[in-house]
Length: 252
Image 1 (cartoon, rainbow, N blue to C red):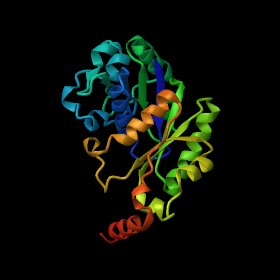
Image 2 (image 1 turned 90 degrees about the vertical axis):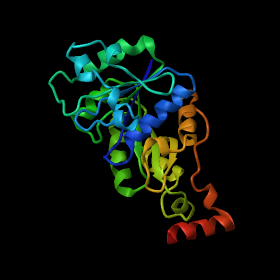
Image 3 (image 1 turned 180 degrees about the vertical axis):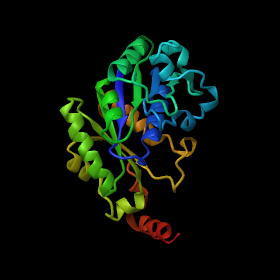
Image 4 (image 1 turned 90 degrees about the horizontal axis):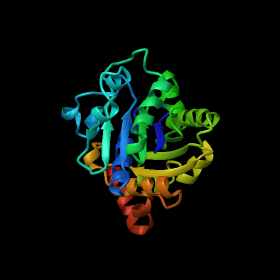
């Protein structure tokens, strides 16, 4: 099983939504995928996936030996996808990188991929999740404050020898086409890491079920095969007709 920690330099960049989208895309490709919510205290992956009413046990129950990891899994409506939910407000002393690794090891024989959603920032929760995984994805937006924090996270992940990649979330195609936000290549140069995914903004609506699947399919292909294209949100805003679309969107 390949374990991937999904993190960000700051909150509010859509890290949890990206985790859910990538998980469903990997599962749709036929890969057995488990999403582990390691964002203790601020967890909401169960809500994003619409599974909150199915949760019986959580990762804290597993760590404290109240149940086995398999018992705590919640099956998603998408075939091959499961969630190991976090515990609301739980910050017990048993939450260590070693215990998270033990949980992942107990699931390794049953899954192809484990996506670990960890807290934003570089505090203890970040370190616990990162140390337990073998690969990392940083979620950022194209805004300067998010890129500055992502740069700090990229440096730390590189020091952990995780060779991180980046997913740029909430990209407005009209602003990208007009050169008002940095491009994928510019962001890759700033962070000195490869960009594996570009997710467009969805007019202020970020509920998972309303986000288009294509950018996550492209992201999943790059994660699995190591090659492939990323979505270009600016494509429809280029040229004469694209300029009209940009004007229309700006004036709404």
